Length: 213
Image (cartoon, rainbow, N blue to C red; front, side, top):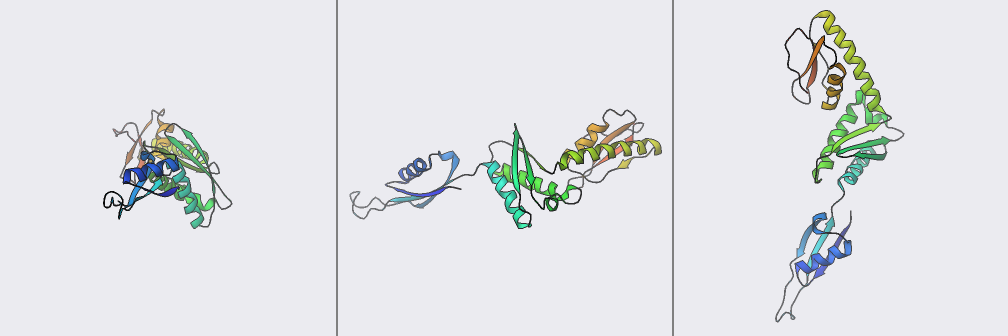
C-alpha cells in the first residue's frame, strides 16, 4: 500500500502534489488532511504550509489475496494464490504444504474462507464480484460427490415415497444438487431454512412442493 505525505500552500495544492508523486487520481486514493495550513500576515509572515497524507487504495483482488495469505499464515499453513478471472467471477486457487488445514472437513473451512474473502473483495470494489476458492481441485471433486449423493438420495425418495432432507450447504452447492436432478421427473427439489442452515429437500414428484434455490 503506497502512502505519501505532501505539503503545499493550500490543501488543494498539497493534494495535487501527492497525486502527481503517486501518479494516480483522487478516486483511487484516501486523503487525510494533517494540517490545513495558515496563510499568515500578507501571505508571508507566520504562514504555514498545508499537509496532507494520501494513501492509494489497494486493488480489491490484491486485498483479497493479501487477506488470504495473512489468515493462512496465522493458521500455520502458508500459501501461494493463483487468480483466474472470468467477468465478475474471481477464482482463487490455493496451494501449500498444509493446504488440508484450509480445506477442512467437507470443505467447511474453505467455504468459510470463501465467504469472508468475498466480503473483503467487495468492500471497496466498484462492482460485485463472485469469489470461488479452490485447493487441490477440491471443488471439482466435491461437485462429483454431490451429484452422486443427489442421485442416490433421489432414488431413496422415490423408493420410500418420502421426502429426504440433505445437510445444510452454501448456495452454489445447493445449485449443483438442483441442476443434477432437474431432469429427473420422478422427484422435485426445493430449499428450506435460512442460511447458514438452508438445505435441500428431495421429494417424490407426486407431492406438490416449492422449487427454488
